[in-house]
Length: 58
Figure 1 (cartoon, rainbow, N blue to C red):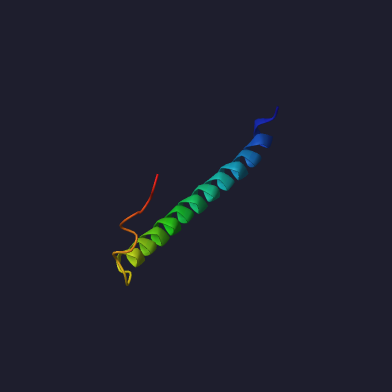
Figure 2 (figure 1 turned 90 degrees about the vertical axis):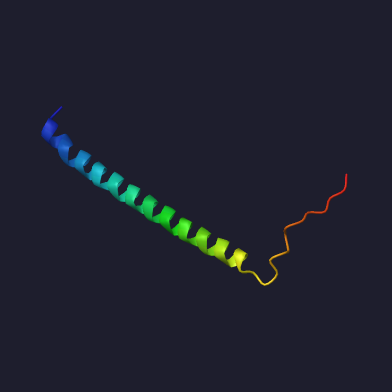
């Protein structure tokens, strides 16, 4: 097998992997930001006492 003929596909694979990792990092950052926003919304809700107690019967 010719090593030089493998170098280009391997380089493309490395670039593709780097792009995928960067996209996953961006997705995680976006999800973290969204989660923080939802948490702040819940903390500043109009009726903060709702959802603190659970009624159940067995």
